[in-house]
Length: 322
Image 1 (tube, helix red, strand yellow):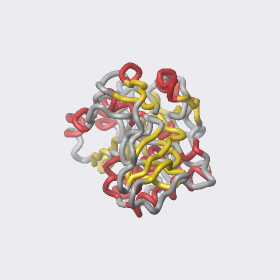
Image 2 (image 1 turned 60 degrees about the horizontal axis):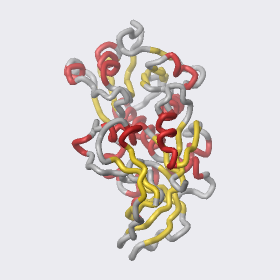
Image 3 (image 1 turned 30 degrees about the horizontal axis):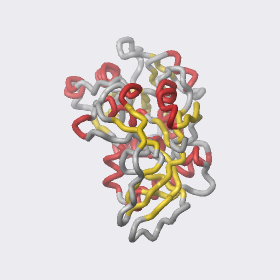
Image 4 (image 1 turned 30 degrees about the vertical axis):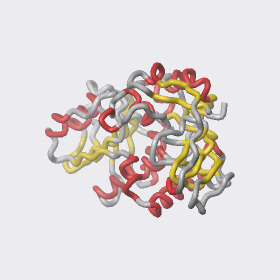
């Protein structure tokens, strides 16, 4: 079968290999899933660079999000059968034609959602929901709160802007490049900055940060009101939030949201409820994201190059079947 493999850390375009490998027989409690579509997310690529090497074991198959069809079931599996459409979660491995996963980590895809929708129903929607819930736990009511959202031109950033608005928040899009303006919905305040030129009037109750590095440090030290919150959920800059910036603001609550940590502690009922909200948001457009292109897995290099294009507008999907 066709698969990807990371044997060493480095530039994803250079170190992710396309390999042929044998299918694995599902064991007791496991199912084999033929992957129909898998998404490319920053959270797939950052571990490849070695940024999380302390918790990333080589070799590994990338890909945390996608949808597929159950092709074989192991002993003791009764809740799933061949032909069922599922989203396998809980670990990487979606960038391959077939994968084996414990049945309990495969969640049913609703019949009324397309493969394209189902392939984007996990990482961004559930992350956005967890981030908003974290704000709600800190502030109580979010009505009238001001929240800065870095990387707001991304697919997840766009979902956050819409979700926050529904909560009564006044969100501000924080962009590192003027080129990203076209990716932000109309009517939102926009700040374009790398951190060195923050507008004097930029002030927030909270910041949701996917960038880290210098931008995060400047936002922490200069923009967050006393008693506010800074929640990091990514490090697109490749650099962590400087500890000195955190130490300098004891009046601000700091948190890091790693979706995988929550997923592994939440329990089945909480995950089912989160997916139900995701599916509803996909149906009504709240969690909808444009798709820039779908590539066969055999053209992974082109897909990764497109993913890194700063002018890209939309998600990149992979079809491991070809």
